[in-house]
Length: 259
Image (cartoon, rainbow, N blue to C red; front, side, top):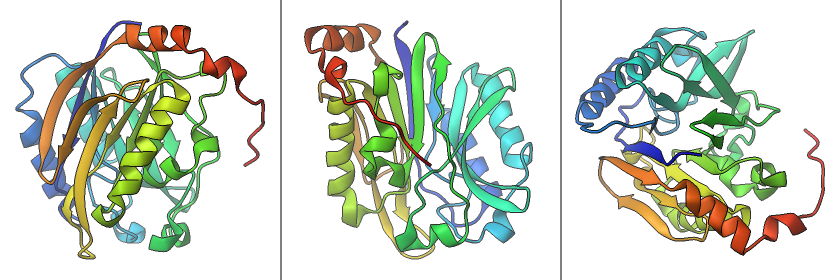
């Protein structure tokens, strides 16, 4: 692995306004002044965490994915975040992993937030995604997935970086911070959580608290309460060194996830 340069955008999201969100993010990303390998946006970055899928959903290859390709190509990096997709008459909270050449992978949110009635609108995914970037194996997840350690378990050390893109409310932010740290330590991987800020259309406040935690639980980056575009480096040697010094993953229980 090479060291990886990551840019996170902890943004305010304009409620159910795709054009305004894409315009705002484009403006904010124009402030990037150094080469980056990966840009991470919050969950449902183009709409906010809306259940109005019938009104807001796009087809694969629609406006927002075309925008994602444009941004990835411009910055010569991977761009990732989730959008509302309609496919085969079903709606998905879908993470897109957009490469600068226009190829992409995707992950459909597995654990739908029943307290917010997400399960009544969207269809859950049934498989994890592991992608490769500069030698790193990366597992992207979405918000509520963070609460389910079996689904995120780093079985056989298959990933080096876990990403959680989110709309996580401030009233449960202590859970967010605790669980991100736990996932990093138990899986001996970097964890990057990217959350939104501000009130959404339901007057739920989001404090951000976007963060990066290294494999031993140290904080690499943390920001609260305001929009923030930040670029930092995660160190490949830190993963190798941690797993060699503390070979806990070798003693893991073997199990099979049934979906």
